[in-house]
Image (tube, rainbow, N blue to C red; front, side, top):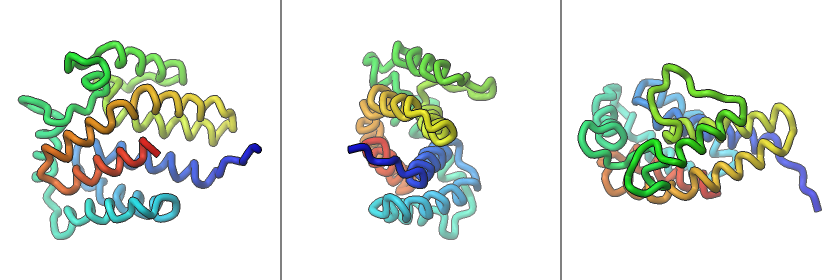
Length: 196
């Protein structure tokens, strides 16, 4: 039996991927709006995850200074010394704890096959968590635009090959090393979303 795809749910799922990708970016005041929209969207399709977002929102109550979050973001994902939770798939997928491995090249090829290229302003490898989550958003959006199921097939393949295999280790590293309930909640939320 063929079941029609729920366009509204797919739209909301795409938006969740986009919003989560924004939350992994450099901390800014746009994060509060992204959290609000994320909570609103999850209320409709994944109510079980709303408490995670509520916990993440607590960071912003009475806190308009993002220095603490910027410090934690840098400590986990940027360096300057050891990356506590490297945001690159190749570190986890290719072994040898190396950025720009074979899987990075494959991810870049997946982008190109979908008609995309990395922005010149983006100074990260193609398998950065932000880019991979945005790509899943793009694939769902292309399906919604064209109704061509190949885009959902590409999404499923991309998730299975390039996100799901490293997401648990990545989330565990954040949970073990972060001092912020914001990033711990974000890691848990991402793991739940990707493994749905």
